[in-house]
Image: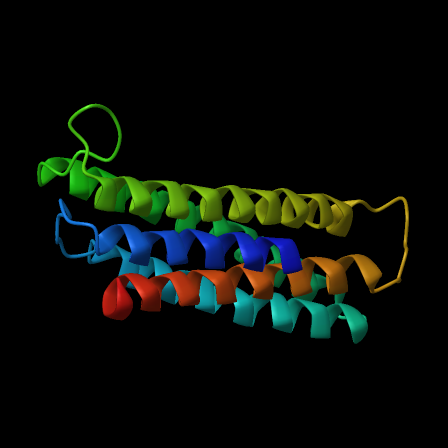
Length: 169
């Protein structure tokens, strides 16, 4: 997680340096990013509650909450894609010869974050499948604790990026 933090700090630092060199296109971040921020924050709540339910041996509640968390993770990614579509519809080229470096930074930074979210969703789906497996009854909370920690981390990184895009970038 430390190396991921360093990578995002490097990306946003490069963004600030490049912004001050000229040829910088100012544009509003898609409004749908506000919704995606709410969705990922809500997913942190649901995974926290899922971990609590697992530790309390409330397996049916755990299953519902871990399913909801996975769905919220997928929804977050879908909202991000919609946001990029909005930028394209406004004529802001994200990549390619007609792109502007400001839009390209947004694109690269957000896609790197989405890849980390995708890794989190894969981990969520793994523990989701294990939650519904009836053959093995393993009550070790380590898997849910690890996934929960990573998921909260991904949430915090997005909040950092969202604040950066809206008030610093």
